[in-house]
Amino acid sequence: MKSRTLGALLIGGLLAATAVLASPVAASLGRYSEADSIRFGWSRTTGVNDYLDETGWAVRGHDTPDNFVERLLSIPVGAVARGAGAGFEARVSQGTGLPLPESWSIATAKNSPFITSVYAETPRDLAAVLGFYRAELGKRGWIETVVEPDRAVITFTTPRGPVLLRLSRQNDRTIAELSLRKPGIANAGLLPRPRQAKLMLGNESDEGAVITVADQTIKLAAHAGENLTNSDGAAAEIPDSQKIGLPPGKYKVTLKVDGGAAASREFEVAANETWGLLAGTDGVLLPMRLY
Image: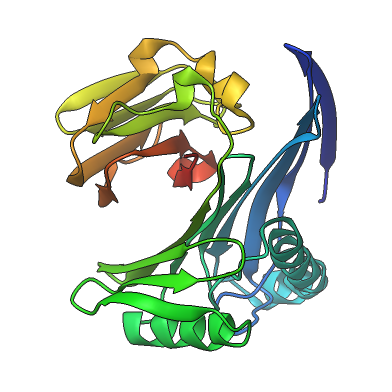
């Protein structure tokens, strides 16, 4: 039921090690359930001069067992999965120092010389998620300095520098983005144009995928650009055909993985940001702030 794949790849003087749990195991979605599942992956890239780039992602799902036998068989899997979910949260906390909101269904995390960030989607309402972050970050002595109540955008003053929290509500979920910019000098291939945003597209699935953003359609072969979030060097290697430059704003993003239905959502980008958008397993879009 549970398989673990470890790989090491030497690229441009950087040693990239990736661990992926490919088979579903469980974790809670709100309250724990024996039918919940989780897929996640984690990469760690190191290099000269103490270079360190850590990346993680996780997707929770929820399936309803069809009968008593399936429910019975799912109980031990659920126990394993709850530990896997807690382990992922602990690793995000250790790697980034930033908390994930409760009941997250999709989460990504990044800790590089240029940025520390977490992204999460949760079924909890915006007020509850805002209250969670105010409580958690307040415990650390972080002070709110800028608040935009209409958009739930808050800047916290911290010893590590300003931390930006952005919350938005979309359909039946709240989207949380928490990020800390760092002074590291990024590879030119990672940087957006001045006052613009950049999207870098990849595909982690075993099937071909199509991502459409702002009427631009990008076709991705299976596993094309799947490592772009692992380091700025890996991001620089993807072709220009998988990069989109955009003015700041909100855009409709549609993902269709071969054999699956198309799914659309709204995605907001700000000036001088770079995001990776990966087509994940099961046709789930995985956004990750890279710069």
